[in-house]
Every structure is written in structure tokens, then in C-alpha cells.
Image (cartoon, rainbow, N blue to C red; front, side, top):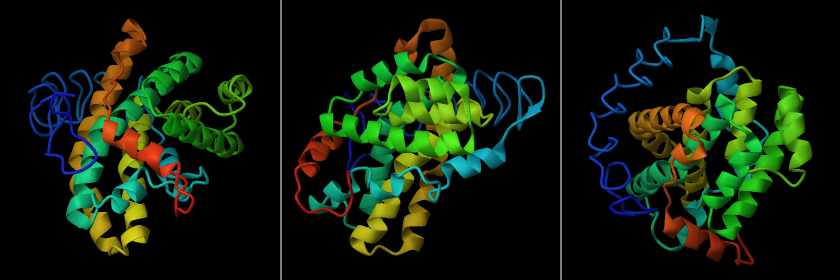
Length: 284
């Protein structure tokens, strides 16, 4: 993976030997020389030159809907999954707040970036069935594919009750056993009136908040320390969400091959091992 961060003991930074916190030697927080926080040279927080807080023509972005969707209490089943933290704790790779931060950083820049790109693309309007196949190709571990579809099915149930949508109904009918969770997440964001950056933020945040919450239970870690880890990772979450949203816009023109395909083999191996445990606290 050429310097790409793994699941533990990772150095601060991005994937494929990039500069710490950046993308291919770019300025910290930006993509291709853009203003930090923007997409394609936009003002911070906006998309394609929009005013912060508005989307294409002045419609107010659904910040409230984003908070509902990203809330850990949203009944999407995520509380039953550790995001690989349980296996990492058992292997000694997560021991305290510092090692939890290293694990979450690695997960954010690999699995989190890939999930954020898929979610952003679904929110942008790419065919969710095509994206579901793309997600399969980006998930080499069978255990993680099973988990992603199980979580996608649970999220679909909650979302159809919360934000009814013909697009959600169509995907549920086409994938009765569940589509990959990031794809469903992006389509849910679209149904809730959110855009690709919002979907990317929700997916990226989930990639780190799940392990952080699980570590509190697995290690009796102080919740204040776990929350501080998430706060320190917030600037990198901004970068990942921006990169994922930018990739989604490119994918509209270039196809899904433009989406991130970062991976973390150690997470894949640990997931396969965890699936064989007869006793475990979390489903994955």
C-alpha cells in the first residue's frame, strides 16, 4: 500500500506515501490546492462555489437531518459492531487512548475513506446497484462483506421509516438481503435532502466513532479520553470527507473508478479471525 496507514501504530498522514494529513503533497486540509474545507476551489464548507450552508441555488442544507443520521442512537445497528476494535484489543494493538487514536486514524484514512467515497457517490446520484458492486470489489474480506450488508439492511429499515423515498424502496427491492452500508447511507442522505459532502462526513465519522465507543466498553477506557481522540481526529475527518466528496463529483463524469479504493489488510485479516470466535462482545 506504499506507506498507506494500517490498523495500528500508524503515522499521522494520508494514503500512498502522502504528506501528513494531506493528499498527494497538497496543502493540509485541501484537495488539489483548494481552500481548506471546500470542494473544487469552493469557499470553506461549500460545494462548487456555493455559499457555506447552501446547496445549488440557495436551498438550505439539512444540517438537522445530518445530525440525526450521524447520531449513534439512530437505530441502524451500528452499536453492535466495533469496527475491528474488539479484534485489535485482543491482539494488543489497542491498549489505551494513544493506541486507540492510532487505530482510528488508520481506519479513517483507509476503510473510512473508501466508505465515504461510496456514500458521497450514492448521494450524488450514481446508480446504487453499480456502487454496490463497486463496494463488493473494495471489500475483499468475506466477513466484512457480510457485515456491510447486514448493516445496510438495518439502516434501510430505519431510513425507510424516517425518510420514505422511492429510491430507497427500489434498492431494498433489488437487494432484499441488504446492500453495502455506505451505499445505503449515501442514498439515505439523498432522501434526507443532504449532499455528497454530508454523506461523506457521516461515513467518515462512523469509521472512527464506532471503534472509539467500543473501546470504552472493551477496555473500560475513560469516555472523556475516547471523546478527546475523536476531537483530535476532527481535522483529518474534514480532509477525508472533502477528498471523498471531490471524488464523487469526478465519478459523475468518469465513472466509479474515480472513487477511493484504499484498503487495510490487517483489518481484513482481523475481521476474518473475529468471525470465528465463539464468544465475543460485538458482532464484528
